[in-house]
Length: 425
Image (cartoon, rainbow, N blue to C red; front, side):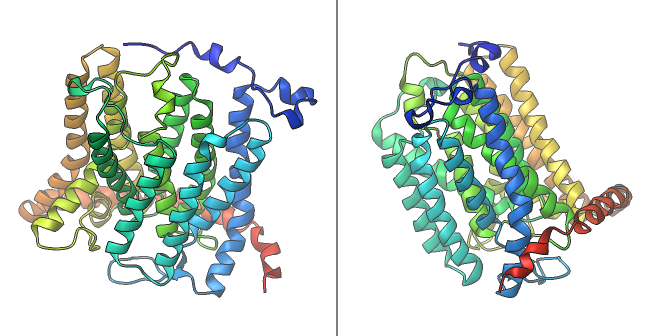
């Protein structure tokens, strides 16, 4: 297994500025560490400024998600998280580009805007699942041909390194559709999609930083900054509460796809070092999204339903129905995902061969992601006494978390963030 260079060597490398700014000493001496910090800081600041105005606009234009039998919120909630995300990432990209050339990200940013636009239409007028499927396929093909994002190698897994063009295309379409819809399916309770996305952004940012992939690390830290702010408003705020909606989940899904299927030019250069365990690493990182989506789709198809027909069979629904509040259910699923990631880290440190590590990670994912679902479902049907004990314990823990949540809510909602929003006509 090849190991990346030490972290201090990567962080000590200087960034080559654009010619237009080369006369500024602070630019020529800027390190990647400072650039990563700026990439995360800008969206972190933009979200609290922009989000309250977008919430007010959404309410005035009735761009909200209303309660129904499947959705348990008390009142309509704005569903324009994608608007805030695209704005924050776009502004940050423009500023970062002044200091470092991020032209490699342009294809992904363009496709993100396309998916966001159609997602916004879906949030407001509704689009058929067939149309959305065709749109997702087109987006994946655009990145596959125009941006070289795709499954071009399995890094030695099952003896496969470089792939034929047809096999690469088939695996790219399958992986892309799975990841894009996995993020969309995960966006079912407060904080889950943004929490898992934040975990992924932190981990992929560090991974790319360790390997010296500056551009890829920058987009990870941009997403990290955005989700850090968005998570707080999505989970804790009542006055400024906002859902991601399809526009946000598709845009976030694109980040997940590009991190799991990175630009092949980063990996075809022999001067770059790449982990042998990249496939199992990505499976571990996105195990909560991937495995829960696969289980839900298979069950729906077996029951004769459309795989895109909404229901309450996700793991987060089972957790909420067992008495957990949204925050507790989100924390539990994120911890489950971290547990699978820890198994990957241990197996990689032990130096296990690629195939063995992949199956160990897959087994850990099934244990930590599928296991709680089947256990709670079984107890609910066949062991009501034990299930009642679980519900009481979950309710007790939820009450404790709700006290903390109410304190954060009062702190956020008492801030006069939307004061400038009243100027909107």
